[in-house]
Amino acid sequence: MNAELKKLFQTLQMRQFAPVYLIDGEEPYYLDLITGYFENNILNPAERDFNLMVLYGKDAEWSDVVNACRRFPMFAEKQVVILKDAGSLKGGKDDIKGLNSLIAYIEKPSPTTIFLIEHPFKKVDGTTRFARRIKDKGIRFTSDKIKDDNLPAWIMDHGREINFHIGEQEAQILASYLGGDLKKIVNEIEKVRINIPDERALTTAHIQKYIGISKEYNMFDFPVALTGGDTDKFYKMLSYFITNTKAAPMPLVTAAFYMHFNRLYLACFVQGKTDKDAAAAIGMSPYFVKDIIATTRRWPLQRVERCLMLLGKYNTMGVGINTSTDDRELLKEMIAQMME
Image (tube, rainbow, N blue to C red; front, side, top):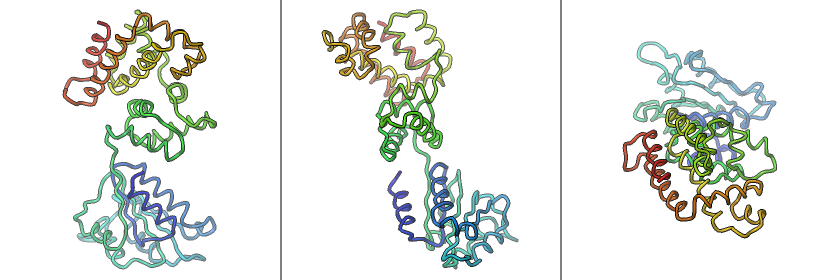
């Protein structure tokens, strides 16, 4: 949650209300949060029955909205009027259309009305008279899309806000696998938390089990197949991921491979330890620790270090830095160099 949004919620929680709010922009997640607060938190339940009015732009006339804002609250100090999908609001006569029809009210808003204008999926032109009047009389919040390269950091920040640790690699996997739909990401994280209420951190095992990844073509098993010597399985998976590039974006590939090779790297230093101590040092279940230690005999430290360096290179290339090569070719190049 950015500083501007935090400030907005702080003023709402302190009940320092502006007469008019405009929320707009391409990212609906934050707009839904704000609208939900106006619907559920400003008025108490008894007040909401008489003093909360929600209108929809596609169904309402501008006069309906203004009349709703001008009415007096019943048995309360304030009323809340919410105009959803404001970009579809029907205008008045002549050249007065859509949002412009609300300008007269915005210039002289009712002191007993808290008016929220929700304009999702698109920014309102800041040079228009309507936007200038909002700036003079009320508060505007614009919800911008999170850029793809900033998405993992956003996911980690969200984890901190809900007191659920999400590491960098786990955040990268979620970003690559779920895409930039913030609402979907939040819902999937919440689904995991419901299933593991006593856990305080998200792991790759949780992602695999609760968010859902193909069991036959599981990205987490892909690097294991490479280093485990199961040639038939590995080439079958490689063929699938080359053909279905949406299932294997390079950031997700490099994240999955990094986690596996990082464990291999740590496994190179635990020979002689008990399974329990080795598992603790590597950060994995004791049930699997013998397999990964055995893998280090085929993939010794020098080879693992080389693969980690390759992953750093291809992770950078996978986000479009210093290359225009598509993910399919990058995947083939990386695997070929790892197998040398």
